[in-house]
Every structure is written in structure tokens, then in C-alpha cells.
Length: 307
Length: 311
Image (tube, rainbow over all chains, first blue to last red; front, top):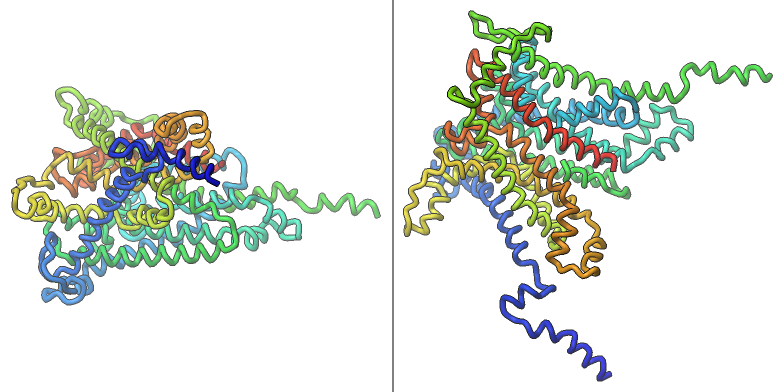
């Protein structure tokens, strides 16, 4: 009994001996204070400016830099009609943002999912080339695609006027790689066994895709919807090069053009409003993802972190 | 009786394997068509405009479709105006390289410790930290830059904080062509894109590797230098490429945070040309140059993506 007590003391002894900064530095069990300070410092730097911008949207004064008194003036009832829900231009910009995101989502996700399934199973040189092209759209700086498409629609395919149609065509081109990458990661983790089991039980290849593979892909599809939506709301370059009259300019362009020209806090309110709706869509996407992947081993969310 | 049994397989016209591969091709076809029509074709049009003519009256570009008739005048014009006495484009191009190099190194200096801490040391706070790291992804880039524009105005919060409540009077106009602000703006904009892949990688390193290092007598520091860091080299390169590629094409960050030609980048050259009547072809030349410039990092990034796909 007394032996164990002595041993315990001997193990502790070296830690007690060194105190002070040097001892702290040498202590192998110390908390990682430096790293945690860097991390929290980074997070503060990353998020506080946005919180300030949100707070400024509730400014009762005209200033975009100093918070005077709180009020909903820039959301609802500015006397000059410049509040978010009064100003027709801001409303049009927000509507255009949604229109573009919604249309892009509806086109890019089905196209991408079909493409991913096809390319994943279809072997051959053409398939390899197509998958190369798809990744190329993903890594290419947006300005290249945006300018290239603008030149096409301006000088050649004049039937497609710059505006919503051109913007959606450009956005789909730029976004289609997200569902492809997400779905392919998912396909990899599912394997081919379920589908083959379906076909062994008498399903045709087409049925096995519709009734076995597709339900297994739902999590990836929901994730794709949410990501494409959030990324299109965020899009600026493609949408700007392909926009026509000012009515086709979404919020990102509006912010860009007024940012250095004495904007009112209504712009902050508009950006905050977009942020709230994007958060809701992402939350819905995540909930759908969770629901659809119940009881299945995950593994494709990690793919999201690599995008 | 034996004959129809033998004949049966030949009646089912295409064998299943071939029929299935036709189904795969049919699934991929719309996507392939889309890429050809709206990705490859526009890039070809850019080439046709670069090596094409300009309408003498309307000053609009006239694309030349046949590569054999391509005219390199516009291309060589830009190339000869990069360095030397006529080097009007040189400074912006050089500046882009300097900014991107500085900004992506700073990104790495921030991203690695943060990713390392969250992946290995954050304990039960991990979920919260991850959510906060992902947050910038759904806050629009423009809003994040706009937030900084507000903070950095002459009467903005940043100068208020600097003045320590009236003790000092910082006479800095942050938003009028300060390279530091532009570089930090780029870091602010793109560092989240580096943290997440690094996090995903560091999170996957088996702790048995690190324990083996410690068991073999390495100190914590040398385990880091000789095990963790070499293992994460590919992830670090990938992270650098991920942030550098969009930075090379960026023009809006510098426009918003400085607006001065003193901080213009390649993206601004393209943007100005595209916005000016009659200079479309010149902008197209820069687009092609940018693509040539980035071809190696793009291929590298594609390789890492493909490696991830195959596991």
C-alpha cells in the first residue's frame, strides 16, 4: 500500500520541479494556448466584420460606418422610400438573385447527377475526356468562363440576349461540377453491390438506377442542391459579364456597384436578408441530407470539405 | 427442343454489357453536350477573336474560324507591351504575381495552425469550430468585402479603434490604393477555402503515425517536423493552388478595397478591356494569357481531385 504511494509521487516529481514560463513551455500536457489563440483570433477576424455589417443594417441614422441608434428604418420604413422592402431596385435585385439560383439549381443538379452516374460506369476514352473537361470547369478561374461566354453571346449567338438566359447558361456551366464531384464521391462509397443485387433480382439496368441507385444518392443530391444554391447566390463574375439591363443585376452586382459610392444601410439590410435565406436553404438541405442518409455510413460530407 | 434454347440468346439483340454501356453514355450525353456548347465552344471563340480581325467601322471583333487563317497581330501586340519601353501591361502582371504570392503564403500561415488546432486539439468544441469555419462559405463574398469597406472608411470603426478613443489621429485613408489592404483583403476572402481541405486532411492522419514517431524517441516538435508536415505536403500544395487560382482571376477585391490603378491586377486588365468598346480582343488576349499561365496549377489541382475520387 505504502509502496504505491511512493511511486506515484516519483512520477509527479519532474512536473512539479519546473515552473514558470520555461516549465510551461516544456510541459507536455499543457493546453495548446498559442494554437487556440490563433484559431479564435482568426474566427473573430473572419466573422466580426460581418456581424458589424449586420448590426449597421439596424442603424436609425444614415451612416454606414457608425451605429447611432437602433431602428428598422432601412428594412421597412425609410421616409424617402429607400428601405429594403420599399426600394424597387433592391427588391428586383433580390428577386433576380433567387431567380438565377433557382433556375441554375434546377438545371445543373439533374444534369450533373446524370453525368456523374454515366461517367462513373461508362469506361472509355470519351468518358475520360468528358470527366477531364468537367474538372477543368471546376478549377478554371471564373473570369475566363465569364468573359468567353460574354464574347459568344455578344458577337455570335445574338439570339441569346445578355440577361437572365445568358446568366443561367453561364452559371450552370460553372456550377455543374459540384453535383458531379459530390455524387461521384457518394457513388464511390456506395459501391456497385446494391445495383447488381437489384439486377440479380430481375430489374433492368434502368430500373436498378431509378429504384436502387437514385434513392441511395438522395443525400448527395440534397447536398448538391444546397451547395449550388449557396454558390449561385454568391456568384458575381459570371453573372456580371452576362447581365443585360440593370433589371437583370442580382444583389452581388448591386453591392459591388454601390459599395464605394455612399451606400445606405439598406444595402446592409439586403445582404443580411440574403444571408438569412441562404442559411435557411442550407439548413433545409442539411436536414434533408440527414434524413436521407439515416442509417447509412456517411463519408460524402467529407467530400464537401475538399471542394 | 434443343434448338430454340440455343437460339434464345441471339434473339436478345445487344448483349447486356453493351446495352448497359449505351445507357451510361445516354446518361452522360446531356452533360457532355452542355460542356461542348458552353465551355469548349466559348473558349474556341476566344481564340478565334484573339487571332481574328477587328471591324474597321464598328470596332467590333470579327472572329476568324479557320485556324490556318489566324492572324497573330493582336497577340504579339500585347506580348510586346509587357516588358521593355512599351511595357504598359508589365506592372499589373508583376503585381498580380507578388500579391498572389504574398496572399497565399499568408493564407497558409493562418490556415495551417487553425486547421491543425481544429482537427487535432479542439476536443469537444470541434463541432462549433467547424461550423464557424464553414460560415464564410455561405456569407456572400461581396457582403464580406462590403463589410470591410464600411470598416475601413475614413470615419469607420477601424480608424476609431486605431485612434484609441481620440488619443491618436491615424491619418490613413485605407481605401485609396494601399497594397497592404488589397493583399489582406485577398487573404480574408480566400483563406476559408484553404482551411477546410487542410482540416479534412489533418483530420485523417492516423494518430498511430504520430505515436510511432513519439515512441521512436522524437520530441513533439520533431514529430511535427518529420511526420505531420511531410505527410501533409500534398494537402498544403493543393490548398495553395486552391486559393491562388481564383486570386489570379480576381479583380473585384482590389476594385472594392482600393479602386486605384496602382493596385490593378491581371483581372483588372481583362475587366477594363471587356468593358471598353473596341478593346474586346485585347481582353481576350489576356484571358488566353491567364489560361496559359495557370495551366500547370490547374492540372495539378485536377490531379489531386482525381486522386481523391479514386480513393
